[in-house]
Length: 512
Image 1 (tube, rainbow, N blue to C red):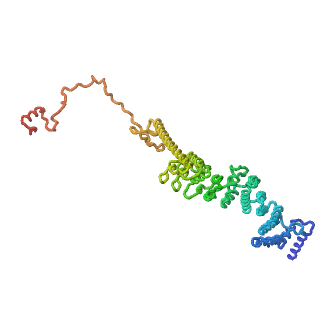
Image 2 (cartoon, rainbow, N blue to C red):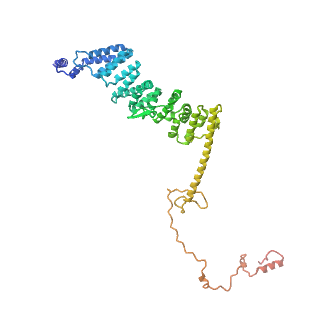
Image 3 (tube, rainbow, N blue to C red):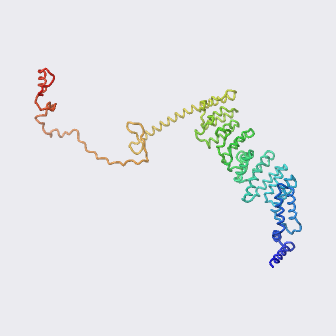
């Protein structure tokens, strides 16, 4: 009973979808997508074509064509497939035709794909790919720029499409920059998020597309609604370049064809996050040595000044030697090049306090290493000699000023010395060495001082006549009886001496 009821409902639904005058497109789609319906048959043909498109594109074209014929059957009262499903069939057949080098039919499928569903980004990508193979790079660029705003959503497929579109737009713009002036205008109007540019510039650096990096950083563009002119910025301004290693990039950019903008590009990459550690052209040199070497070759000292201002701010770091013991001035002395370039570099080194008298490992100063082979070398030697002399005079003046300043500070401290012991620094009596004073150290509590006693007067005139009278018998001034601690005998010194002379001896008598 249930089976017959289901069959009856299926028959009625088919009749309503196919022949009933009140049938709607939704009724037709619901019927076609029922299990075993015609939509599933078309979907199966498309899947079979996708499975063999890479190794058998000709058969895949036949499968896609058969699926399109079923969709375009005039007996159907409504379209079997949605616009997006129709566009996907055209896109897949376009890919298969390109593999067969049938560019004409492939181009027609790509254009029809865009016409059926203008919001389908794959249609613009297919059209640009076909036009590139046909040698129409300008039309391919226009197709990509028109299709980029159609990419919606934040899923992985949409994000990958954005990366691919912007990378291809950059690649085509580099090729057409001088050939087709409209490409410059179109590229500057392209407003891309900085997160997309971060991925694109890393791809450009990885693939060594240095012209593309030059384009997106230095040739103007639009970013966050702000337009940058050529030389003032680029479309990728504000992105993150911390993932780009400068070491291979700087070595690859040492060619003459990049001299006009190579170091400007390096500065932009440093501003956007690249590490200065990788800024080196040969083993053992520092980023400053790399900047000096490139400045001597190109004449542009912007990179050298940027390093001095933002990264190498102390005198110790600016005077660091390389692995061979050479300072920046030693590099100037050894490298050949135009005298104007050398003068520009020397002016920058003088401005930021690099020592021109520092010696290398062999004890040689930079001026002593300049070979007198030609007029340019003679001019360079004279330049370095003048710089060294000026530096020595400058050092003497600085030392004198420093001594005067120290003397003034000492005098000021002596003038401001407090009279009390605490608090503050003081000078001990008889010693000119300043005592150490710790203002945060707790001091001993002051002890109460004893009250001063009234001192007796040295002369009291009131006691002149009030003193007791002197005794009549004064005490003898010298008591000879106590001289030897013996018995007190009342003999005078002269009587004893007379007795000794009479006896003819120098000894005292025994009784004494």
